[in-house]
Length: 150
Image 1 (cartoon, one colour):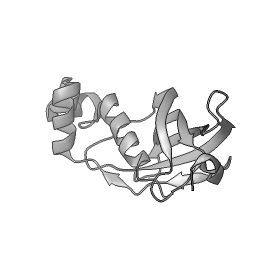
Image 2: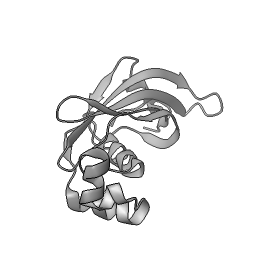
Image 3: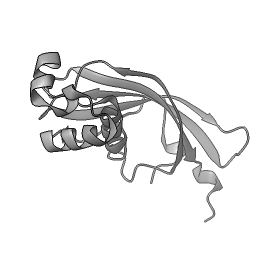
């Protein structure tokens, strides 16, 4: 498990790739954002050249891949604190294979609780063509190792 002290500014973490299926895309959008270009092939093709994920689905993929970063058990994460500068840069289509790259940009100890630290990361989703499709800055509350009882 990685604690606050195990991270450093500039650390880059990568996830495995994830393929978006048509069934998943349509089911998610049908429930959470039933716009025609998300659930109807003809409407998707007319508007975007094919069915695309809705923004909530894109964010959900980002969240799921965040738990699969190549840092072992994903660290002593306590909670997400915020999401800033979120951008849907390019559509994610059926059969796109996306991966997450997260880079630590800031670390600071919590002023109110010395057993916790705050890690800021910039996160990018790339498709199989290495095109940037999504970006978001996150702040995460994480446990401090030196305060864990032995």
